[in-house]
Structure formats: structure tokens, C-alpha cells
Amino acid sequence: MEITFHELSLPTAGTLALTAAEGVVLGASGQQIDRRSGGSLGRAMSAAGFKGKKDEVRDILAPAGGKLDRVLLAGLGKAEKLDGMAAENLGGSIYAALAKGADEAAVAVDPVDGSPLRASEIAAHVAMGARLRSYRFDKYRTKEKKDDKPRLKRLKILVSDPSAAKRAYLSLAAVADGIVLARDLVSEPPNVLYPDALARHAKLLSKMGVDVEIFDELRMAKLGMGALLGVGQGSAHQPRLVVMQWRGSKKRDGQPVAFVGKGVTFDTGGISIKPANNMWDMKWDMAGAGTVIGLMRALAGRKARANVVGVCALVENMPSGTAQRPGDIVKSMSGQTIEVQNTDAEGRLILADALWYAQDRFKPRFMVNLATLTGAVIVALGHTHAGLFSNNDELSDRLLAAGKATGELLWRLPLGEAYDKLIDSDVADMKNIGDGSAGSITGAQFIQRF
Image (cartoon, rainbow, N blue to C red; front, top):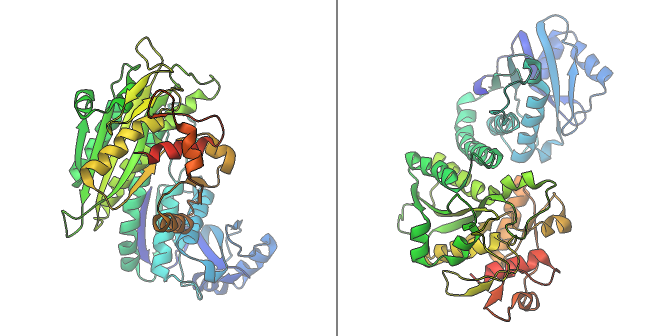
């Protein structure tokens, strides 16, 4: 979908979206149309029961006295709460309501008294929300009916300072590009996206100035990554390690921050095989790596003034005659040995080597590990919060605040010596599962050792 910014001059035809704050306080554009129509807009709002509440959207009759085909009213909620995230939600709601209407639509964005944002900033975030809501992964759908597809191809954002809105949107659009890339990668089927294929997607970021290295199994073996290689040894698709560097700081050799992603492109569970029901969802077990690759795309797109390293461990976990067995003992890059009691606790094994490599080579200020590590965390927290484990209170507080600001909520769970003892092994330095209790915590305790 094409999104453009234009001067706030109200159209006389076509489809127009207007906004109103809670209490049915129309913006200046809505008031202008109401006067032009002899008060018919206000009467239509009242008849439709529109209150201007957050996420409230109403189609109303196009006011008399004009040639507009359709008028959409979108609620802003309380003006003082109209921040960036609320404006993005507004843009998403507007897109969803307009998607199957006309090919083109306009959204009038007026200044909102009491909002912490200027009209140009509201416009940029509305555009961001519409862009993200318009995402579809439909490349493999060959028989979808035309009427089932979105019609909206062009969205015009009308605002008093379109140049300022466009400047504000440029940075947001780069983030959206990263999000879209991550969504595309996570959505691809596992016969298309295996470790080497995912690594090649990451390599494309080289065109944007990201330094990308891809390690094959021979190089990883020389580095001693026995934990990572053990997970992938049952698959016909060989493991890969992707190392991405974005050097955007003036201090190009300055200490970076590091993000490490789990990339199990398909997880059968290995010899400790999963139940067949819903196993198809295990193509998503590379979402941590997909997020890190999307992050590097976003950083490069907005020319972020930071030094950032992204490391992705990529494997396919399959059962075969060469697959890792429960009871095997592997040696990690750190030199620590691991008794593999369950081959379905594989994410922590590949991350052990990826995390060790990242901290050993780059000496980062901090590392953030992103992974679909345990189903147990969904049992504990559901789908509203992601589990957060941290051995640094300041970093934890900053991540919690960032999650709250963006609607990506986190909940910190405990680490501790008592939990750590659950992964002590009788025959190796540690084992990769505990006793069945505190499943997410024992996974985090395992990762902390690296």
C-alpha cells in the first residue's frame, strides 16, 4: 500500500476518514464538513451512537451538500493519552475499516488539544499503524477470491505540515520495514526457509551497509561449537551461524550492544519427538533469529547511531539415524559439557554457543537473547506478556519500560541458585533440562551459564 502526505485540504469526493476525541469533539476538519453540510455530520454521528472513544470506528452516511462517497469516524479516546502507540492503533483501525472499500482513501489529521504529539507526529504514527495493519502473507495463495482481498492501494494522510509528517515517518517506516521482514521470515514454510536459506536472507542486508558473516559447519566445528552442531546433526540441512554488525556510532570501534536470536527453522523435537498435533507451528521456532535480522534491517534503514551486533544460530532439529540422542554428552564452545537428556530442549543448546561466541569476540556492553525457548512460559503468562529473565536490574528496567512504551509487554521472572541446581548433572557439567518444575526458569539458568 502506498502512503503519502498532503496539505490539509479536504476532498470533495471519494472516501474520507475523520477523527473525534472522546466526548464527540470533532477535529477542525470534521467541524468544517459539519458546517458545510448544515449540521448533518453531527446528526449522523448522534444517530450512529458515536462517542469518540479509543478504537471506536463508525461508518456514517456521507453528509448532504457534497460528493463524498463515504465518511469514516475514528475515535481518538482521551486527548491526553494520544501518544505514539495510541496513534498507531488508530491508524490500524482506520486501515481495517477502509481496506475492502475503495482503492484510495484520505485521512484528515488535525491538531489535538491536550495530546503530547504535534499533528505531524500523529500523522506519522497513523501512517505507521496503517502500514503494519495492511501486512499480509499471501504469496502462496493462488485461488483467493478478488472480493476477499483488500482493495485499498493508496492512503493519503492530510495534515497541515506534510513535510514534517514525512520526516517523522521516515524513521518509523524503517522500523516498519524491519518488522515486515521479520514477519515474512517467520511466516515462510520450513521447506523454503531452512538454515542456509535464512542465512542468505540475512546476507542481503549487506546491501544496506550491514557487515554479514555466515559460518558453515566446518568453521563452527573449528570454533568448538559442539552444542550447536549436535542439535543439527540429524538434518539434511546443515547448521549456520550468522554474525551481523551495524557500525553507526561515531566511535566505530566502540563497545557494541549484542542481540542473539534462536533460529530453529523447524523443530520436530528430534528423538524426543513432539506430538503431531500443531507441530506445523514449529516453523515459528526461528522467530528469535527472524526478529534479530529484522532489527538489523531497521537499524540500517534508519541509519541508527549505534554499534550493534546480531548473532543468529540456525539449525533444523530432525530425527534420523544421525540425530542427537537423549543421553549424549556434548562439549560447548565455552568448554563446558552438557548432558542432553531431552533433544526437544534444543534452543538453549544452540544459544549456549551463540551467546558465548558473541561475548567472547565482541565484549558487548550487554546482550539481549530473543528466543521461543519454552512452552512453559505461555502456561505461566499466556500470550499477553513475554517472559523476561535478566541478571542486570538496570537493563531489566529499561527493557520493561521499552516494552510498555511499545505495547510489547514483558514480565520479569526470577533467577536463583536453587533453580540453578536443578540442571546439575551427575555425568557432565550440566544437563539441558531440570526435574519438570520451573521449566522456563531452568532454561534461563542454563543460558546464564554462557
